[in-house]
Length: 84
Image (cartoon, rainbow, N blue to C red; front, side, top):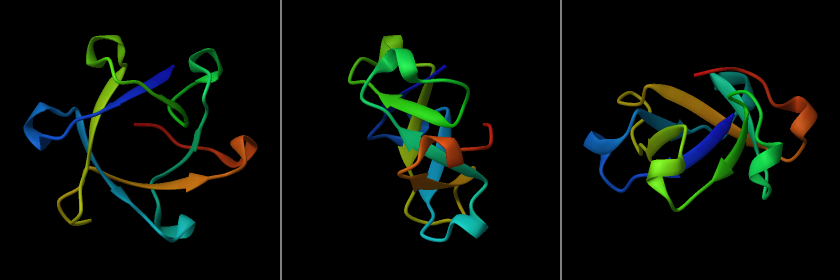
């Protein structure tokens, strides 16, 4: 399940993720759902404001060379793929 909390501090995050504009360069292609029960695996994400209920805490890294992972957001949940 991929319940995601976005941290404002990179040192408090599990992963630093760069938002990739090209899906062919991404390590993971994720889909955002508005229902936490639809969040599955690592590629269908539900964002929460409660960090204690999150599976992963991420930080949106602006420099792709400092990121742990490059991620591309898709509008089609069936095209989501990849893992942390």
